[in-house]
Length: 305
Image (cartoon, rainbow, N blue to C red; front, side, top):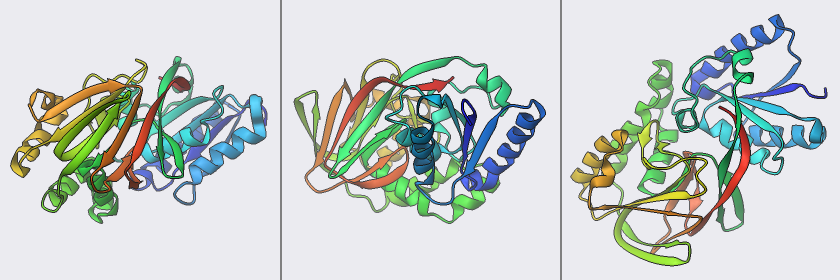
């Protein structure tokens, strides 16, 4: 079908919330006789494969792909469409964290596809990361150290399903943070920001952001904007475990940057290397270990806002 709207739905996102949202969207599409095709994902990484397959077959006839799911779903769709800059991407958040919704101005909760397609389409920056043989993209953030450790824990904790059922999915990050706080050991990290080296000891985390939010609403980089032509880097080091806990109390309001143990930078190319390998997450999903190089790809993706 040429010029159809294509939907990619992650049926597991939000412990089934995405399927409930999709039923409402589907009913509206059929009521308004809107031409569409839909695909449900079967496994992790499937949304990326589907998006790339659709774009490859349809080529320049493809105009719009809309995802329904969590931050992991939009991460996969963007990676699948990263070489198809003409495609306009819509997203209906139905996951547990939904930081993409916060960071890209999706202020309304409506699932009306009619209203969503009337919104403005804007071009935004995209982050690209390189680690070993991996060369991929992120929409929210990429982090090394404690935050990646917490992201891995949160995705593995059984209580996540229960919290999603209770519509309190963002609390999983707090539960994982408290669990990880007792075990994680900070280390020395070298950061290279646009060819300038910075060495920090006892680093808890180094996070590169494309907008302010991660971890289910934490305002990790308050000044970050997804269309300002730079990436924002924040480094947290030389904190006791108790003060780190205080920091995460401040981070939801973006007040943590006032602490002397928090440093911020902006740049277009950022390299992170630890004295020992550090865990890395991209958009909340564990992806491997440092070293990693992060670069900006300006105004390279189109979203309905």
